[in-house]
Length: 372
Ligand SMILES: C[S@@+](CC[C@H](N)C(=O)[O-])C[C@H]1O[C@@H](n2cnc3c(N)ncnc32)[C@H](O)[C@@H]1O
Ligand SMILES: [Zn+2]
Image 1 (cartoon, rainbow, N blue to C red):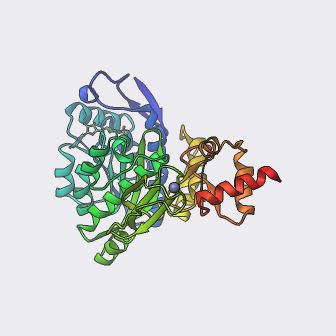
Image 2: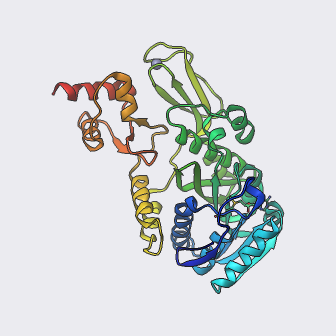
């Protein structure tokens, strides 16, 4: 099957057969991910002009590598599947793009050569590739994780095994996944005296994607570890509290309702998951040949405005729980701001928001506006 994506022509398998590795993998639903990758690479090149080489470490059909090469990057494509390597080579030639294509294990390639940018896009968890990436990348590591059930605590033991952290299944699943993933990546990078700064992170349809800028300095690694901590969550009243540090001091009872049904997750990344100015710069680089241009711009706009609070709420779920009528999002957020709190939408869903108000204060503000 022939597809055009971001101005390049790609031959890709028509559909997946049983067993994901049976044929070369191409997921049309990841077009937004790939469009954002290209926009991010463009914005990153302006931020770090020394960045020239890009390793598409799990290339499959070559979709990312071809698009990056068409955009002027010095590209290497790697896959361990011989059919993938053949197809990636053909797709490069079809678009008159030059790149090195190798059939290897991605970890071996990363340990043998250094790259300015490394892109990890495996099936499931990226953690088996994180050590080699942080040990050998110069500037930017891009990571996709599709194992959202382990990341958010729905597959609890699997999450603990993959991420050396305790994820908890809460209402803010996708954000739990983001913060568990960033925590594990920051701790992995720290082992190589590398500090990470998330420039852009988003959770979209069943995957988490993050772009981490690296700084090779022990103090930078220490600074990244300072962003880690624990989240306590009351299952009864939805109270939450974040505590910094690598030693957990879990709450025993909820300070709001007295319940002992507390979930504690961590270590999670409590810091910002994106750099606002960089997200704006990425939005500038979204161009009309992107099939997902409109969606990408909307996502980036929401991300740039999102508050840094480590968890979010869903207005509809809260109102249902409290037996209160839900309001239009803009009016609801305006009410919170009028009551003196910060409030923003989030990219996790149309009725989700972040605020520095506690759950009790959100309820008070919601009720006050009913009686107005
Ligand atoms: C999700 S697909 C990549 C999709 C592609 N990046 C895209 O955007 O269309 C994952 C690929 O990783 C490859 N892969 C899995 N483990 C690998 C390893 N250890 N080394 C190299 N490639 C690997 C698989 O063969 C598969 O082609
Ligand atoms: Zn409570």
